[in-house]
Length: 237
Length: 301
Ligand SMILES: Nc1ncnc2c1ncn2[C@@H]1O[C@H](COP(=O)(O)OP(=O)(O)OP(=O)(O)O)[C@@H](O)[C@H]1O
Ligand SMILES: [Mg+2]
Picture 1 (tube, rainbow over the protein chains, first blue to last red):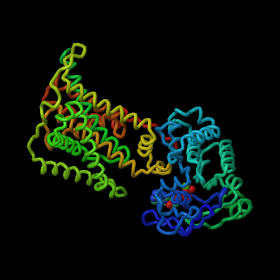
Picture 2: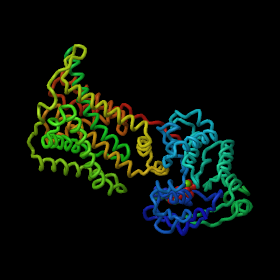
Picture 3: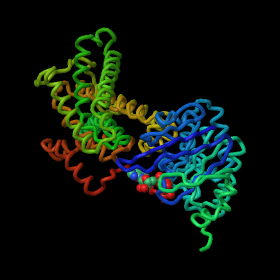
């Protein structure tokens, strides 16, 4: 098991938002996490990345435990995140944003190679290398956020709603890109509102409700599951 | 015309000193969104430590006037940087997760503590920097007679500002500092150790403030334990003038404030010299709170 989340409990102040969450990701997989607003999906990803500290439970990356590790060390280990709301650095250039994505990497030649690869995946970014991140369009910013997440050559890429607010065509492009990235050996954990597209892309899926996993299984099975169809795929409307 | 250029160069020299101090305010504000009220006192400490080092090590006798002063400045920078790092550790880091007001109160407390410590150690009277530190000669620049010390002070502050600017803009660590100032959480997700960035900022800012203290000692010849208040407030004004959090802004703001003050003293009234800075501060806060360079890139939703 590449990533294992065991009985994770997380509180914001006095309010517990994750009530004993369990989750597993195998090497090479694309796993998607679905759930209504406020279910705790972003909190889960932020806790894996070390930005939020759990009150109890554990997170294992292979044999190392992550739940006490400071966020920057988690990145060093090979877990990158494309956070909710993109959070690119507005007043830095596209190129600087990408370089920061590779902050933990000291191998310059490799960073340059990865950057060229990122520019190939998203050619618009190459045209705008010297432009400030904040001046990109929303979709371009989303591409920058994804490219930045790839810059550290992560073993696992966590993505929090990468398709939010994007035109359908662009969503398809981005999902296509994620599949290509996955084929290069990057394991992907994808949080999505766009459940149908996510389940089509993913190998397995988890459904979260109110801070707990209520359902999990193969993506194809979840797509057929009547409950999932009613709640997340808009069937019967 | 002669008077105008004399005032201009004098204003730039003093403004360079303001700018160096202002950088400390603006860099700390950039990453922590906190006004380090104790920064003016770090400047005072720089001036006093400089004097102590100068008299106890007789640097200029050993190394000659130029290198002696350079070594003095470097040592003062290093020591004040350490005081700054200690300040961060003791007064600010424990309050990182606390409400903003706690950190502000802690900053004020640290300021009172440091200025009183200086007073207790050195006494409340004025102290005098040796007058013969740098040769008292005037340089002839394009027919303008300029005191050597003024030219050196201005040159030194410009060199340090340029070095800082290049460091912040061009290096990997500099980019990490800028990133942490924009979004600490996102910076962490890039693998940046934000605690170390903050520590670094608390080394660089105080180092520049400390060397500014030495420069004031050399330029004006005397120092007092309350100097951190006036210079601190002026430099803070300069930082606001340029746009707080903005590094080039602090540089421009400092130089501009120095020149405005010098001109005001010469052409309006010397009695108004100190009031000018505060009028500017109030005017900016009313008219353009983001400062001259403090423009925001619109955030996309
Ligand atoms: N910083 C915070 N402080 C306090 N409460 C928070 C914080 N962040 C999230 N919460 C609360 O925790 C719960 C889970 O939030 P989270 O962002 O993880 O949900 P989500 O599943 O990602 O939702 P969405 O689909 O809307 O992004 C919500 O009730 C939210 O209000
Ligand atoms: Mg979310």
